Image (cartoon, rainbow, N blue to C red; front, side, top):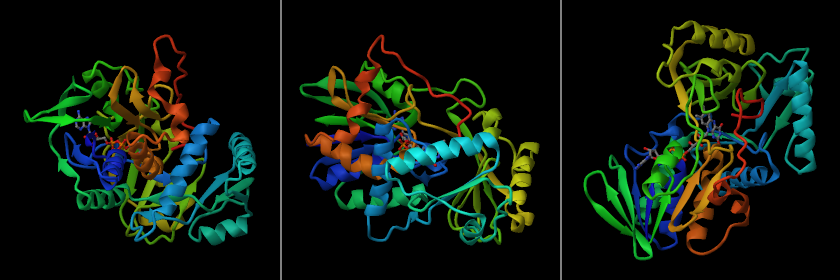
Amino acid sequence: MQIVVIGAGVVGASIATRLAQRGAVVTLVDQGLPGTGTSSTSFAWINANGKEPESYYALNLAGLRAHHGLGGNEEWLRPGGHVEIAVDEAHVRHLRGRMERLVARGYAVEEIGADRARELLPDVVVPDQADTIAYFPQEAYCFPLLYLARMLAEGRAAGVTLRDNTGVVALDPDGDGARVTLSDGTVLRADAVVSAVGRRTSELAALAGATVPMAGFTEPGDVTVGYLLRTIPLPVRLSRVLTTPWLNVRPDGGGRLLLQALDLDATADPAAVPAPDSPLVEDYLERLRAVVPNAGSARIAEVVVGQRVIPADGLTVAGRLPEIPWLYAVATHSGVTLAPLLGAAVAGELFGEEEPLLADFRPDRFAEGAQIVAPSSPRKPGEQ
Ligand SMILES: Cc1cc2nc3c(=O)[nH]c(=O)nc-3n(C[C@H](O)[C@H](O)[C@H](O)COP(=O)(O)OP(=O)(O)OC[C@H]3O[C@@H](n4cnc5c(N)ncnc54)[C@H](O)[C@@H]3O)c2cc1C
């Protein structure tokens, strides 16, 4: 079976690799270099924490387990769990409700006291007035580009041909399969095509005459955009994800920290990225110093505005497009959590093994006239 996978982010590279390992002849095409889409601007917290409804939770839980299950030298994955500290009333109520649902589902979560939190987060100020502190021991964070490197290496070993810096510009039916035209004029024949082009999914589907509605950037601070700030290396002991009402923090290698503050995303605009010495950045640093006193010397090395991959109803899309059986589309937020699972599951589906976990996420739910409830911003605690 000849398959063209379009998009070499964490999702497309995982699918290409698993397909090749099952014996398909795979070409992985990207208009840029691998990993330069949303995969390089991610908080990359691996979790099923605030994921609703039930089927989306189940999918993310399978994603979390798939990361832990990959075995070998998991150079990209940092287990160690996640601690969430809630102080204000609204956050406490939200966290307690979420914990109740997660406990009922058997998800690993425990309420802990301030002393245990201080053990887990030795350099973090755990406020005495913290009303609820939750520890999610199986959650993790990852380095998406290291995960991608591993997938690309496994893919190469299994025979995947990578064509980077080459966009797909046309998709046409050809017998039971398709002709895929690349920007350099090459035409590839494929029995099946997988679209894993992230936030470009609507445009790619349109090349085949199909519709997959995605949430697009409309105004600063909408649900599709979010800041991520990377510090210089700091003398701070932190080995897990920390989320608080003011700041989400995780290690980013070599003493660097990655910062996210969902309420400060209100001004995020991909066309106007603040400089590392802007007043907005000072807000983040103030919050960081309040949470981690050892971060007194912190400066920000990099500010990015990440652009989320969000299908119109906020949930994953995975399946063959109605009327175009040769074109399989995958697009999702939480794609870092889901990549290992989607790699194996989508490859299985292309080999005829239907994956029950994907049943609620078929593209035909966007048929004309369907009611679509769009996701809203700002994002809530437990989201990313
Ligand atoms: C601020 C922020 C925080 C996030 N935090 C988390 C988190 O904590 N946990 C989590 O699990 N997820 C998180 N995410 C989401 C996650 O990063 C994404 O879901 C994931 O990276 C999507 O990967 P992808 O491979 O689908 O897309 P991408 O990485 O965008 O890859 C798509 C690729 O397709 C290529 N492409 C596009 N069009 C074409 C074309 N016509 N021809 C050829 N190639 C094409 C692009 O060049 C790109 O390389 C976050 C995202 C953001 C923005």
